[in-house]
Amino acid sequence: MKLLTLAAIVSATLATSAYVYAEGNKNAVYNPAENVVAQKLNQVDGYYRFMLGDFEVTALYDGYLEIGSQVYQPFTKLSAGELNKLLDDEFRPRTKSGAVNTAVSAYLINTGKHLILMDAGSGDVFNDKVGKVEESLRKSGYSPEQVDIILPTHLHFDHFSGVTRNGKAIYPNATVYIAEQEKAFWFDTAITDMPKHVQKYAQWTRDAVAPYAAENRVNYYSSGEEVIPGVKTVETPGHTPGHGGFEFSSKDQTMFVWGDLLHNHAFQLVDPSIAAEFDVDPKAARASRVKALAEIAKRKIWVAGAHLPFPGIGHIRAEKDGYSWIPVEYTPIEK
Image 1 (cartoon, rainbow, N blue to C red):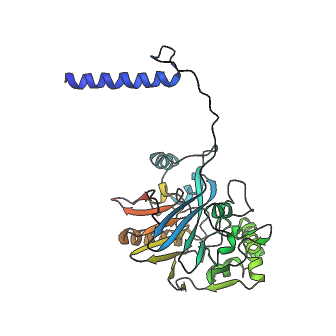
Image 2 (cartoon, rainbow, N blue to C red):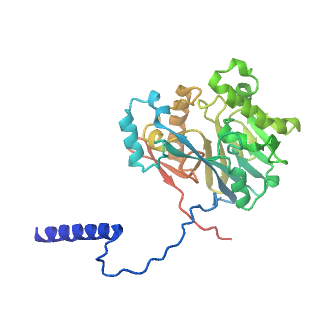
Image 3 (cartoon, one colour):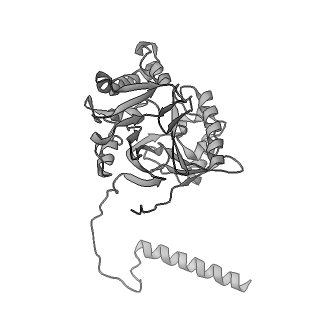
C-alpha cells in the first residue's frame, strides 16, 4: 500500500513539474538563453510509396475536404453526441468549423508495363484545399506525360476533375477508362433531368472528360470486367451507379483500391450500415460496404482508400463489433 502511495505521489509530482516547466517556470534549475527559430509551417511532399510485389504504388495527396457529421446523421440511429465520441476515440482532427479533416488521395501504380493513375483529384473546380494531385505526382518523380492509363473509381469531382486544368488535359498521353454505368448517369442523362444539387457536379464531370473525348481517348467498360490485363474491377454500386473498385495483384500480394466505399472510418468501420447524404443510393452503398469489408478482412489484402487518412494504405481487421483500420507502416524501399 505504501509503495502504491509513493508511486502516486511521484507520478503527481512529475506531472506537476512538467506542467510548470511548459508554462515557463522562472525558478527552474536552468534557464538557458532563448533561441528563437522561425517555424517552417509546411509539410513534407504529398506522396508516399510502397511496393506491392513487383508493382510500385505511390499515394498522391490531393488535399482535404471538410465533411461534418451532419451528412451521416440522417442515415444512422446514433446521436450527434455518439458520433462525436466515435471521432474523439479515433483522435480525428477537426477543422475550425468542427468538421472532419477528410483526406483526398489518388494512387499511381507503375506495373512495369503501364503507369496507371487511379482517380485524379479535384483539379481546379473546388477550393485551394484540394487540387494538388498533379503537383504531388511531379514531386514523386514522375510527369503527367508518362501516365498512359487513367482509371477513375467514379466520376465525382474529387476523383475525376483533376484530369484537366483550365479546360486542358493534364495527361496528354493517357486514355481514360470509365464504367458504362457511370457514363449512363453522368453523360447520357440530360443535366436538366438531374436533381438541382447534382447539376453543377455533372457539368464539372463533362468538362473534365471533354478534351480526352475530343481526341478519342475515352474507353468504356462494364463494371465487374477485367479492364486491362491484370486489373480486375469490383462492383461496389450505391455511392454512384457505377462506383467500383480495382484489384491489383503482383506475386503473392493484392491491393484493392476502393474509391468511396467509405468516407469516415471512425463511423463506417464501427458501423458499416452508416451511409452519407452524398450516396446516390444509400441502401445499395450500405450493402456494397458490408459485403466488401467482410471479404477484405477475410482475405487480409491491402486497401487503398481515397478518404482514409493519407496515404490511405493499410489493412482492415475484423473486430467483435465492426472493423478497425491498420495503416501501413513507413518502410524504406530497398533498391
